[in-house]
Length: 452
Image (tube, rainbow, N blue to C red; front, side, top):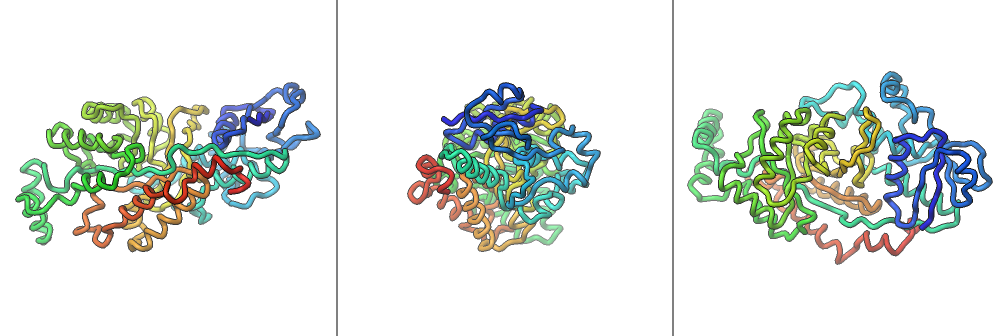
């Protein structure tokens, strides 16, 4: 193990947070932060300085930005002048501050600034610095750390090895409605039929009649088909909507026996996560109540969540999840664009900028979502497959975690998902077959970062 002392003249939770994140990439590199100059000067081992002073004959220097120690209020006051300084390029200039650059992206600093949200109250991709720079598809944080490690190898004449990821991909299936038409109250069935009739949607009326009479299967009832793909249980999670009263919350009651049995069945081959309702992103009591409702249906603890409609409001949403006992959240991404919202393809701890503290909540960023391709980008299936492959290749290159979002409703191939039959299966089959071809976790044990 190579122990490195990293000196900063102004120690802070921000600095420690970034150091711990960087250290998590490597098997044989131990980074210890130091704020005492005398201790640093007396240290005879490998030395790094976050600054440009001449303190030692042999030390690796990292530039320090003037903005790094400013309070959130001061940064917001600086406004666009500060935001324009956030590094958003794969190219590393002389004045590049790795520590600051990583921190601004992982902390999602830009989402704390006053900005016009979209119609669902979300921070829009079009307002993000990465989107404006046309670099959303590149996990800059991972790239920078890799390049930094290579420079460190050259400077100290050492070999740095990556820490293997235990799981390099996962699939999250959001269940907004267990069934399209089945197992709903009679008044909803009649109301739906009348609404379709009045709108002239005779094909939809006929579909309802066939489903109600048992002639065809409900198109959202795709659970058995997913099970037959043999996705490892640890790599598959169903995120279930368990409450909510808004027009966007349409799931069945979990008190229904048929739904309870379905959840029990899902637990046999997948993990279960919470899909907090539309209005829950700023209401603690709702998340706790919905988590309790879902937990009563499950035999294993519910520790994962993904926000309905990806509605994240920083810092409130993540604080509420922590209060409710959630340990991992899978909402970090955009509805309208694929790529890496936090410029990172690895899980990371959430940093509460207002309280200036790192938390135990793990953020697992997702790379793509089915709805993004159909509704926002309006891709054909062939285009989507190419983009999925490109994102997967990127995650493999930087040995990140490739998480994809799908919906049980996206298998409705007679409806809006016509011609998308087989897309999900093609992507997932490739992921499942990975160990037979190229397992990056094995590769990372055998080579230094120089060989990647």
